[in-house]
Length: 540
Image (cartoon, rainbow, N blue to C red):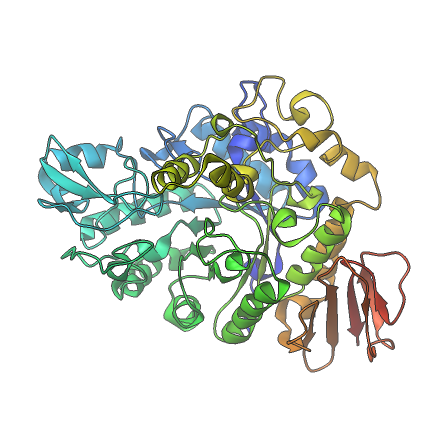
C-alpha cells in the first residue's frame, strides 16, 4: 500500500462561522482560526478542512457561492486566507478547502448571464421549457421557474443553488481554473461537495415514483461522473501534491472503489453515509432507535470491501450531522461513550476526521423554539412535515435530534459569556452546557475527552500498523461488543469496545499477554468490560 501524508494525519473540520470570532461581530472568521492554530497544534492535528468561506449570499451558509475567487466579507479577505495558509504551513498543518461545484449561487455572474442566454453561458446550467418532476434534497420541487428566461432551472438543493451543467466543457474549464487558483495559493487539497451528483442525464426525463428524491436515478453516480473526475485529475490535480475527498451520497462500496482506486486517478477517498443510517431509515428525518449492530455492520462492510482497493474516511460528525454522543453514545456516560466512540472509529483503516468540538464532547443543543434554528434544511423539512399533517411536537422532536444546527452552535472555548466564542451575541445561540463542556476545562483536566483524543492521535502517529495494517472483525455477530484486529506481517493490534451502559463479561481474553496501550478506564478487570469501556492491545 502506497504511503502518503494524507493517510497518516488527522483532519480537523472547521465550520468557520462557529469556530472563533476575532472581531466580535458574532460570526467566526479567518483571523479567529489563525488565533487558534496553537490549540490545533496541541491537539495534534495535521490537516484542516475549512468549510466554505467564499463570497456568498449565505442562503445555505456559504454552500451557495457567488464568487469562487474571493472571500465573504464576514469571514475576512483574500489577504487573511493567504496569511492562514502561511501560518498553518509554518505550524506544519496543511489546508483543505471546500470545493462546491455541483451548483453555484443564483447570485453568481454565470447564472445571471445564463438567464439572459448570453453567449457561452446559455447552457452553463440545466434549463427546460416544461417542469420536470424531480424533488430536492431540501424538500419540495427541484425545478423552479425563472420568469425572465421563461424556463425552469434545476436546483437539487435550495432555489438559490442552481445546478451547473457539467456536460458543457466550458463549465469544466471554469472548475479547473478555480482549482488551479487555490492550489497556486498553497491550498493542499479539496473536500468536494456532493461530487457524485455533478453528472446528469441531460435529457432530464421525469423521475420514477419514489418516497424520497424523485428523479435520483438520473443523476446519482451517473456514468459520466468518472469521465469528468478523471479529466479534472489529469488536467489539474495530477500536477500538485494534493488530495481530494469526495462527499458521495447514496454510494455503495463498488462505486466508491472505482472512485478511489489509485490507478483510475479520480479521487483520493470518499465520504460515504451508510453508517450515518444507524439510527434512521437511510434518511435522517425517518428516525429509528439506534442499535450498535447497525453501526458495526456498515463500518465493517466499508472496511472489508475497500481494503486493498481504495481508501476509507473515518468520521462520525460533520457540519451536516448532529452530535455523535447524542446519536451513538450516552449523555449519562459522557466521557466513557465519547472516548469509546473515538477508539472504535480511529483505529480502523482510513483517514481520520474530527469535527470541531467533537474532541471535547460537544452535544446537541435542542432549542425549544423553531425560530432559534437557522438552517434552511431544518425549516424546509419542518414545513413539509406540517403539510403532511405531522404535529409540531413530532417535528420538533425530529429537529432536536437531527437538525444540522446541532453541529453549528458556537465552539465552546471557556465558561465565559457566549462560551468565549465572541463578546457579541453569536449568529446562533450557544449551547447552554458550555459551563461544563469547554476547551479550557478540557485542557486543564488530565482525564478529559480532549486529552484522550490527544493520546489516540499520538498512538496513530507512533504505530504505522494503525494506518496501514489490514482489518478483520472479531466476533462480528456480537450485538454489544465491537471488536476487530489490525495486523501486518510482524504486529497485531486488537480493539475491544463495549457499546452498552451495562458491564460486559468476556468469556475469555486471549489478548491478555498483549500490551494494553490504551483504555478509557484507569482500572481494568481482564474479563469484565465496564459501561462503554474501550481497550486497545498491541502485540509486537
